[in-house]
Image (cartoon, rainbow, N blue to C red):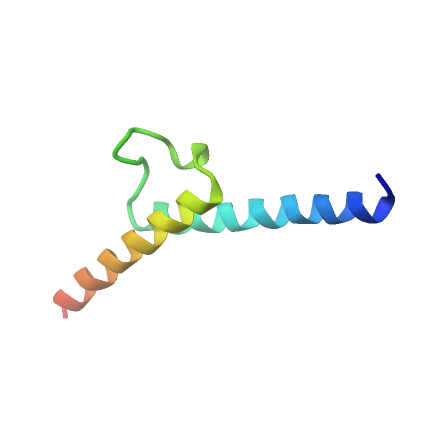
Length: 68
C-alpha cells in the first residue's frame, strides 16, 4: 500500500468517526440512549445511527410544533 492510499483510508475512518460522534451527541441531547433492542449508541454503525437520528429528530420536531 502506498502512502496516498494509507492517508485516504485513515481520513475516511476519521470522517466516519466524526459523523458517528455527531449523531450520538445529537441523539443523547434528544434523550435517546438505547435502541429498542437494547443496543447502546456506541455499538451502532453509522448507517443505523443516521436512520435513528432521522426518525427521532422528526418526532422531536413534531413534539416541538405541538408545544407551540
